[in-house]
Amino acid sequence: MKSIHLVFLAAFLACAFRQPVPASAEQNDVRTIVTKAVRPLMKHYGIPGMTVGVTLAGRHYTFDYGVASKATGKPIDDATLFEIGSITKTFTASLASYAQIGGTLSLSDIASADLPSLGGTSFDHIRLVDLGTHTAGGLPLQFPDDVKTDTDAMRYYRRWKPAHVAGTYRLYSNPSIMLLGFIVAEKIHENFATSMQRDVLEPLGLRNTFLAIPDSRRSSYAQGYTDDDTPKRLSPGPLAPEAYGIRTTAPDMLRFIDANMNLIAIDGKLGRAIVATHSGYYGVGAMTQDLIWEQYRYPVSLSTLLGGNSESMIFDEHRVRAIDPPSRPRNDVWINKTGSTNGFSAYVAFVPQKKMGIVLLANKSYPIAARVTTAYRILSRLP
Image (cartoon, rainbow, N blue to C red):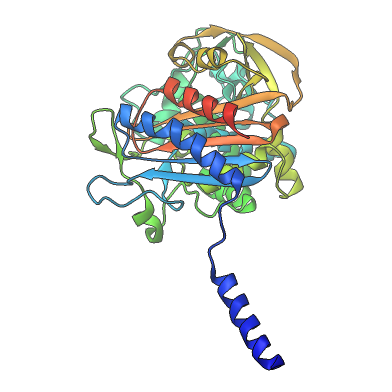
């Protein structure tokens, strides 16, 4: 009789362990909040596919909506690769900070001292930190149309003349961070992609984050769409990897957010370098310009975030208030960065004090204000 009871018990336990594990109450709450915010957004802007990642004290939740390609109907999943545009710059900033902590360079270095080919140019008076905070004196948003290669880019830098003294005005600039990334790689004696892979992506365990997508992952690369629904993906350009070349997934971005909040165990030097990118160098209205990252005292209003992420902050120059010495990284702040390519839109934000963060990835271009608003509403309603 005892053996019969044991057989029944074993059968019961086997069935029990085969049952799916129910989603946590927290996950269901987060899913409801995210879905209510994202579904109307996708409908309004005709976004084919989105993924939203949320981190709460190191617990990760990702929610996938729509399709990676309208042609194939392949659904978005956690392995879908999205272009993140200028959020790439935060990785470049991490590499530059890592090089500084390792003694390879100092962000206070004069640019031409670290790249002698720029000697005798305007970069004799511009520091690396000026390149990483968009305060070099007026480097433009994009290269002129006649700059088509890396060689053309170097020629452009040599002839460029600033409109302002470095450290007095902020003008958001791709060529600025591109030059910083190029100089860092030169000092490390590697090309930029190799340095990024070895010193940042691999130590962070970001196995689905790429500057060059391997053939084995091409099928996971979402098709992007412009605002008029033309299929579009990133085109190669001069020094593109340094400023907007990364393709990645929501789970990898959540891990990167956690690293920025010092919530995961990684190499001590890299961990310190990532957090150091949150040092504040300049004030621009309510926003503090860190090394690429932008931060606001928390709690912060939606209107303040929209002002700091406005078109004016992207396209216009703004006088800055130097923070000397730079402020140390803080926890009571909202830190964010937007990213865009012609066919993709991204936004990432986190609050170290609350140990919470969010990433929005979409395979269509849509307004930054809508991204910031959606992320703010989600984070404000989280349990």
